[in-house]
Length: 521
Image (cartoon, rainbow, N blue to C red; front, side):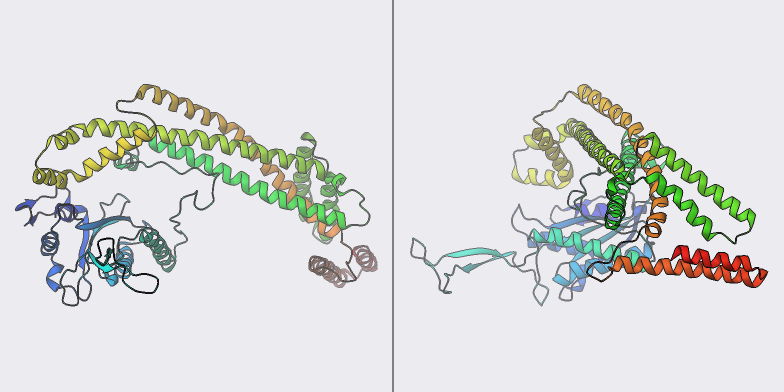
């Protein structure tokens, strides 16, 4: 009842405790609420005060779980109406249709964090709307379906759940279904964003670092334009991840390109060792091919295009010469070294970022233990069972936070109070080391950008200048497509030549066109 009051932002009366539950929260954040009922539930349970008092009354054990809670973040890219339709459809399909009552609270304070809180009932109902037991007993049967007697001579019985709502499989199912529901809604709204509920590790992405959780206070400060330590750390992680993605894509693309060049050259009968083929000559030969293609352009256009091509090619050749990348083999070695540098950078960044996250978690855990120690001490001193239960009802979240923080400290072999000064110094040192890696990453990125320019020019030349021989009397698909493109280029040149003949009628142009055709053939 206290949870419902908090989410609703209004006071509710608990018949179990014989007292009013007050929300101590801002009711303005509540945009929409609804109690979603399955078809066999009494209509009176649409009133949440009636519902949760009935739930309390149905439980006899002091350790009974009365409800299951969810907090679900909604996509900011959707409107309120779209998000509301999305969450209602999801709740109906995943919970209400299975027999649960879903108490839904839509919160949005206008700070870019729309979300819903759900409270679900734990007991199933019969067709008349009466609560059913959570468990039942059944005879233990052997492989033949016969009952088994125990050592005391009585039939053995086993306890089992009446519904499978507590099965751990639903943790994965509900998350996956929420992912699908969000992506369908985003697609229907014409948005390009997509959701993946898996962590980087589960997606098989081992080179990128997840960002750290900002927390309520830091997130509020960031929204106001106030930089925080956690916000700065996330910006650092974003920057490094962006660079890593760019480097990896470039390395992969250049590796494929290099392999393609090697295969093309190795098929050419006149090249004895493709690894020694001079890349500078390939780039220069492109100028001649483009010159023929622009033969009938006006002089100004020819000059402008040629100067642009020449400048780009000279820059590329200069870049290759500076790094002694004169051949395919030299380029391959460079890509190999770059890939090794990339792997080392990735491992180093991952290790340092992981340690920073651990330190942040330990500092927060130590602060939590310090702040909540009075609450836990008060709880420990209570001896009466009923008083202890009432205290847990009021302070459940604080006690859980305290225990969680203690478990984390114990995991790292620490106890409160920890040496916060030493950990902060270690974190500052790690941040400096990560910052020092930036120039290296930027330098590698600049080199790979230049190599992409080289790749562009070489790929323009290789398909036209080198052809692969037929295998077993039949041309490969690659050769067929390449030949078709060459023929298309020839037809284009001839068409341009024909137009020029009609315009000028000059016989020399006619002869020149035929010479070009023979050369290209």
